[in-house]
Length: 222
Image 1 (cartoon, one colour):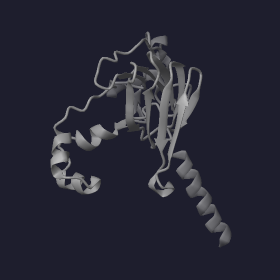
Image 2: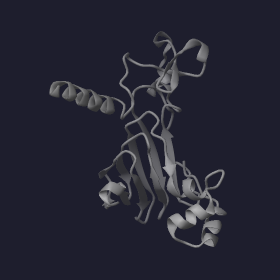
Image 3: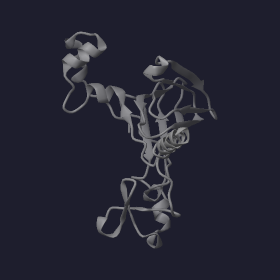
């Protein structure tokens, strides 16, 4: 009987690991296609027949500087399965993040991917907060050109340019479509809005402050 329980536990563990991230492909590639009549549905996308794949399916032109002229002073240019259809089922994506001086990529989370960040230019102040079970510990670091930092899947994190010039970073993510939830936008800019009574009690502040925050324009740098 102990052996049976052990096997069930092992199967449960293997299943949890298998479904924690994007599934591994069972063929060379599975290029996403919008025509549902001529594809097979795999991992959120329909796939074209591999024999019709072309080089363009695996190409993104010119990942150049993003426009940082916005209230946050930053711009995230993502390259996911929506930009490169050939990423479908491959479990990776990336983003270029441009920062004006003092620019901020505000606190956010990726619900489906771990992020590893490489600073190409400038100096960034970065950090993440652990889960409630770990007492919401705050990990932070100042990164310079060539430095690398990791943000675990699902944890709230941010990056801010603390240098005197522009900054650039490349983020690689462990999902073809990691998703992003910007905390301030989600909490105060949701549609329809979250009840001000709920938010006032959650943040332990006056409802008038919540009303004020919900009336603000919450900038999106993606």
